[in-house]
Image 1 (cartoon, rainbow, N blue to C red):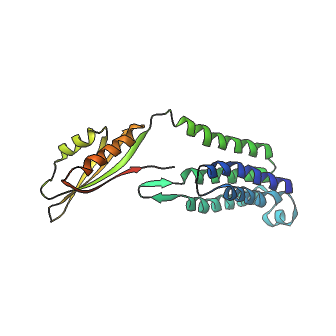
Image 2: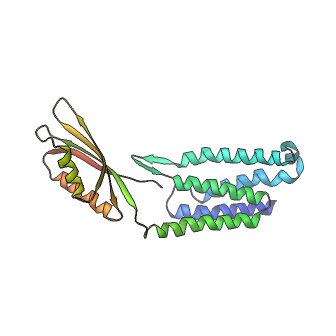
Image 3: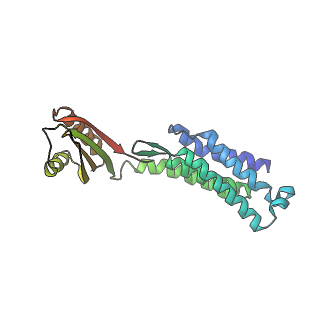
Amino acid sequence: MALRLVMAVAAGSLVGLERYHRGHPAGMRTFALVCLTATLLTAPLSSGPYAHLMGITWNGGSRVVQGILAGIGFIGAGVIVREGLSIRGLTSAACMWAVSGIGILIGTGEVLLGFIGSFLVLMILIIFRWLDRFIPRRSYALVHARFSKDAVPDERALRERLESFGFVVLSLAFKGAKSGALVIRASVWAQGKAAADARAQLALDFQGDPKVVDFSVEPVASE
């Protein structure tokens, strides 16, 4: 059982190393502890007072596994962070869920299957990130702009202005004020690497327009 604990720390650290290298908040220590805890709770189920307490049946083991996965849900929720319109930490939360499963496998004696799982998780994190460079992807953004009182644009002109930078306009909303100022809110997307250039060019265009009082062009991302 002690050897299983050591192997659980090693398996969790392998996944955590990739997350740590990418600068994510959950790193090697977090993933090693998650995997170790899952193994600590499942390894003694085969014998001893802990096994008798939980019941040496499949019902007892299932209660332990359900408790582990419920606890991982709370930890995973703490890893997910919202920054403006972007959501970070989804992949790290999913990795924690996978690592808890790896710890359960090692704790129940399926050591080889647990390390195969660790290897597959690493391959998903590394190879799929590499594949992202070659797969065309839509990049979404939210555009806010407030126009002065004497420069209220119409919807058609706004759509043409946004589309001239390569954006596809999904929605366009208007919000007015009694002062006469008009605020627009547009949801747009552009394809692949051109999206960043399109956002920068639109920001420069708004910056040089005296009719625009203030604006923001915020990308929407998740990881």
